Amino acid sequence: MFKSQGLYNRAKEIIPGGTQLLSKRPEIFLPDQWPSYFKKAKGVAIWDLDDRKYLDMGIMAIGASPLGYANPYVSKAVKKAINKGCISSLNSYEEIQLAEKLIELHPHTEMVRFSRTGGEADAIAVRIARAASGKAKVAVCGYHGWHDWYLATNIGDSNNLKDLLLPGLSPVGVPTELKGTTLPFHYGNIDELQSIVADCGKELGVIVVEVQRYKEANVPFLKKVREIANKLNAVLIFDEVSSSFRQTIGAIYKMYDLEPDIVVLGKALGNGHPISAILGKRNVMEAAQDSFISSSYWTERVGFVAALETIDQFEINNVVEYLRELGNYLDAGFQKIFHELKLSIKNIGMKPVPVLDIQEENSLLIKTIFTQEMLKKRFLVSNIIYLSYAHNKKIIDLYLDAAYNVFLKIKSGLEKGNLNEQLRGAICHSGFSRLT
Figure 1 (cartoon, rainbow, N blue to C red):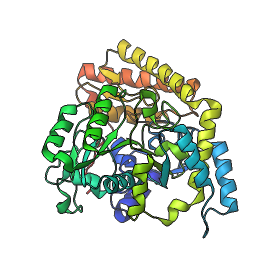
Figure 2: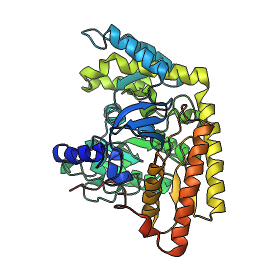
Figure 3: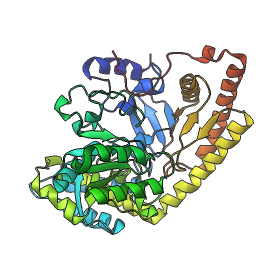
Figure 4: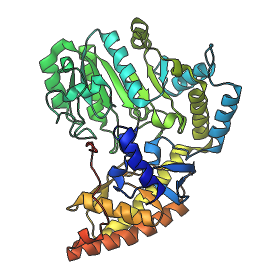
């Protein structure tokens, strides 16, 4: 047994759920075989506890490292900040610099609050929006984290969030009194939102939408959502925790002539260092002073410094265009493989974040075998790939060559009807489920 497997078995005994992040559970990738822990990460390379080196052609820290792991410029800025002291009884002046930079990048916003994670930033945004609107009910579209306000959607009906990224999210532990305070609608389905409005009337004070996750943004839908929010005098929040810094520097909504009341940024903002931001219009954001929203570690210096340097690197190196070109190159490679092998697999993601939609029967079996065989070739893979500035065409060519051979083997198994014989362990999990 490799060191990682032994350590993970121990983790499941002393850490509920085994990991701090559902999306990093080994069972989601390759049960009992996934190298769960790393010693070192640099660029797109990761070394596990047995010093085996892998190339990350998968989740790249769930999209948190758009410049690559341990980017030298970001690391240098962070080390300098740490050496000067990362926290004290006074505030970090860099938070003003970052606030000004983010407002510059998002000119329709006027004020900024900071936190450390995407989920808590969404919770802050909703708290501010409720305070500003004076109304408690929230209409929600997309995935927005683990906090009570969001999971309340599933109270009484665990299928309410079924199609919103992760099925089976349990509201156990969330007060049942919150039932009916958060109401879901599907992306692109304006009729569902209008139905919520008809039921709630003027009690609806907040609308929260992911602008874009994988597919291209539905701009007419988003503009209708904006119109509805205006009619209700409701606060419109765009959650860009995952989508920001993929197709533009900052939030994607800027590309589409849209203006939310609040926008939430996270993940990529600090290139692996915890930082998230809540930006908004002054008349909305000032409501934060009427509620208690405060935390010691939101004043810590490293996140601000990392974000400032990350933005600098995006601007200096035209990272957005680089990711777009790399995404197009990878997409062309996928199309060639799937066309030649006649496999029903499509890339449905935005170009910098390819998402492989396996439309063959036994899709989880195919995904598991692909992960299993690519791991043997020292690639960490998933059906989602967050491309980074540290990726290049040489790495992609190595990946595509390996992927072709694995999919060729999978195709043979499908044709012979014995694909299951290629599996060396359990099939990967999909979504949320208890480990025991």
